[in-house]
Amino acid sequence: MWLLPALLLLLLPGSAAVITGPEEVRGPEQGSLTVQCRYVPGWEPYVKYWCRGTYFRNCRILVRTSGSEQEVKKDRVSIRDNQTSLTFTVTMEKLRPEDAGTYWCGTEKNESDLGVPVNVTIGQGSAAVITGPEEASGPARGSLTVQCRYVPRWEPYVKYWCRGAHFSNCRFLVRTSRSEQEVKKDRVSIRDNQTSRTFTVTMEKLRREDADTYWCGIEKSGYDHGIPVKVAIFPAATTVSTTPTTTMSTVPVTTEASTSSPTVSGLHPEGRSLLSSVHFLLLVFLKVPLFLSMLGAVLWVNRPQGCSVGGGRAHSENQ
Ligand SMILES: *[C@@H]1O[C@H](CO)[C@@H](O)[C@H](O)[C@H]1NC(C)=O
Image (cartoon, rainbow, N blue to C red; front, side, top):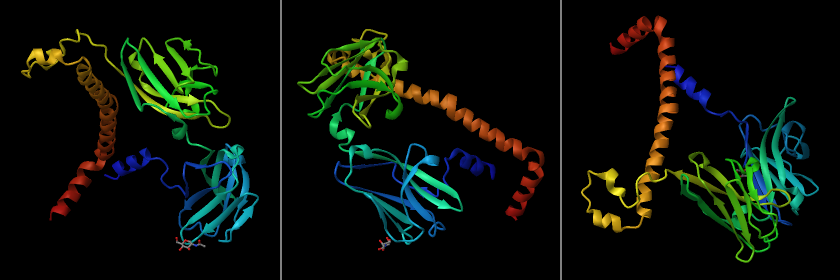
């Protein structure tokens, strides 16, 4: 049965990380920020450093320790290694907008370097600039509307709507040209109302495959602001909406009561059935094959000698 833990280990991402740090840190303009990176025991006496660049292999070192606990300060950046708490702390002061970018907590041991990326952002967080619905949904072949609000000062900036799990590489669908004019592209439109500081996105002729993560974004120098909006598409009603009880024939509900309730109540069961169908698809196409292949692998490995060895061990354990 050693195979199952081995398989599970293979499925897990690299758990043997030497350094760990925060994915993102934020500091205010002209203020300071602090980053703490941890390392595993055994790495105490080695050099620790803080460097900047998209890629670790050619990032520019800003400060580095010499493997000691002494603080090292250079320009607006300092680093201090605490070998008791297995942590080194980097402080950046008098922050400027152009300090935003990718940095790395790094350590050097026998010429081989290890590092973890830390995204540094300067200024207000996106959540403090844009607010919008966490989720939006619409019926297949129908349409949906999403409204995102923003705080003062952002009126004259480009607003956009993009699609993808990650904001950093989401795909633009529509963007405004800093004006209040509606922009329409394909089945999606956007309009910025700078008086109410709201931009409205409308998606039409919805299809099931439109379901995804989208972003309300504001373009600016450095990193754009963006907040995620989960879009769900529920099936278009196949029957007239005044008879939502037909699918629930086992429940003796008075039809008068159900028809008098608004159609919105009829939408909820459909949303749930969409969810359960997603679960069903996951079960059929992912979980079951995965389980079967693992089971198959276990049986295959145990097969040639398995009968005698396994049987023998079972006997000795019983006695
Ligand atoms: C190092 O960390 C330990 C444990 O957290 C703490 O007690 C100690 O004061 C720290 N040393 C320095 C120099 O900050």
